[in-house]
Length: 464
Image 1 (cartoon, helix red, strand yellow):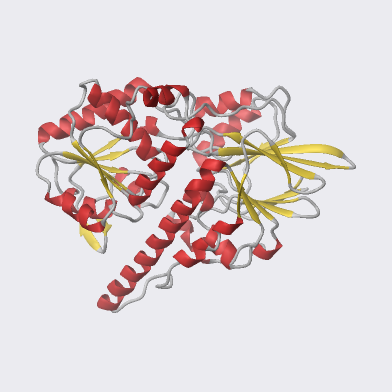
Image 2: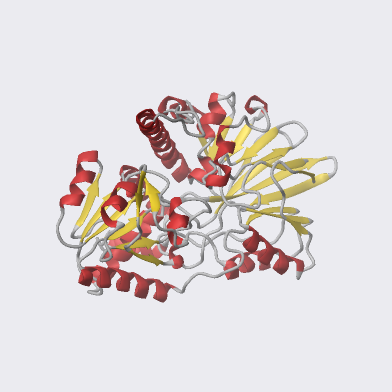
């Protein structure tokens, strides 16, 4: 059995690993690179021929784990794509939205470059199209949590709830041959304990090998009460100043979690019932999936629905789907909350709202999600000014506030807690999906347990 690391190696996005069992090749995730330094890899040929891959196992639908699937299929993959039932509902929404954004961005860049008489570093064609995305959906095969699915006579897989986003999974693979059974667990993205909406992440007591994320391996998140305090402060201070609260929002989980908090805090009288715009067709569609998948949510959220207090419907909330409706938000007078994608300000409607607010000291840019290196969100968070948005340069005058406790990722203590559940040491731990500081911190903790651990480099392979 051999594993090769095709992405998220000493950086965060582009998750992709291929497991060669001797008879078949199994791909775990097929993610888009989102850090500017690595986006060129999205355009390269896959390191292995897509036609040689028999199965794709998807941990969850975030683009850094799923966003290259249309390209994989277009280039020859025709096997099945295994994923959980909620992910099966969400993936067509996510990939179709990504394809539309890629088409729109390519068209916009082409027009801009023609007007400026120059060419950009990448072709002025989309990485893939809506048509490419639609060809993936007939390959989707949903598998339930907690039950083994036999891939062939000697390989079986089981999906476990990761507690990261709706439908997220840790994937356990068992290979049985003349040498006996061997197990490898791909953690995917590990969620936090005691978060709203979702169940806690699954834990394990044994595995021969681990491929583990390390996004926050060097730091913890804020406590839940601190999150509430900071959210109330950001809203109330901005209202007092007469500005808008602009939130780059991931459509999956973050949008729904923000609605959960805003509805609860408003009902408790801790913030005013503001006009709140969820300006994201994809987030609106994903919220509908949440409402159809209640059995996968935690008990606290289920109780809200039993009491007719849906966190996804409260006074002042406006769901904005059309472009005209999005533009009309800028005509609203008085303070409002504007939630729009993309979560790292890489594209989407958030850029247009930023052009209207980034020079206003009375407005607040509220960062509630991870900002990968090289993204516009990370540049602003790191203090860059001016910044370039939609081809124009803007000085950053709005207030920048970050609340890290919203993260869907386990913090340092949670990652250590997850590892401490193993009763016996794995033969080897591979750390992925993290920047250098996070990886080194988590590696130091694992070394203290006398476990074998390393952080693979891009395209590096290991015989298991």
